[in-house]
Length: 277
Image 1: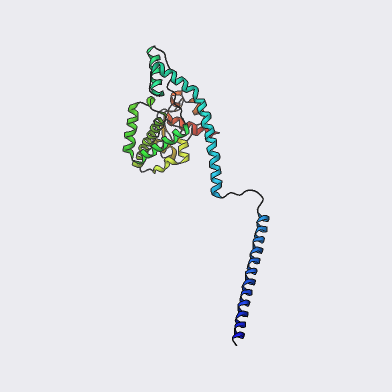
Image 2 (image 1 turned 90 degrees about the horizontal axis):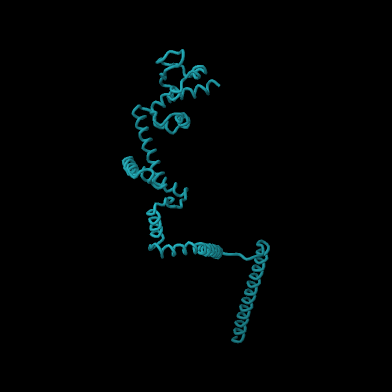
């Protein structure tokens, strides 16, 4: 019995070992088939060549950019050599700790001898200056009209001609903001919607007038709320109220230069010319 039991036990173990070996072999074979299939699929789907990870690609791009910057810097340094040489010569003769002091001393030397020199050269990026000016103006305007008035007064006291290009733009923007604020108050006092200032047709109509014509008067003519009183030329009666919205061609021809200088008459002339075509 012991021998039989032992044999059975050994048979079971041998069977288990065989089963395990067969299973392992099957798994390995299936794995190999899967790998082969994947390799074949990959080979079919992807063209030949080297592939980069995002990290490798970014590193390669940065290396190229660095090399280009280095080349440009070396070229710039070679270009600056001749200016550096001039700076050293001037420094040895007129003194100065840096290029700014050297330029100041050089200008004084010639000015003392009565030589007229060109204005100081300033390299200006107009787009960047305009961007900075608009940004500064917006910041000031956002603080309210008191801040706008204070800064505009400060710049005016310096003198427009003495301002930098950026400050000139800022000053113009602030003056425009002050004028618009004045016009808004003028219209609101007459219970007129100030949004008319943004109306395209009104802006086009208003451009026909001088800046000293009150916006309320232009609004009245634009909307036709009031008849325009003008001195009519020639055979027409003077100081009469012209109820007609337009001049005739004969009336336009009879106007004097003085009358044409009147913005009210001129606006009506322009309107009539379009109407009479």
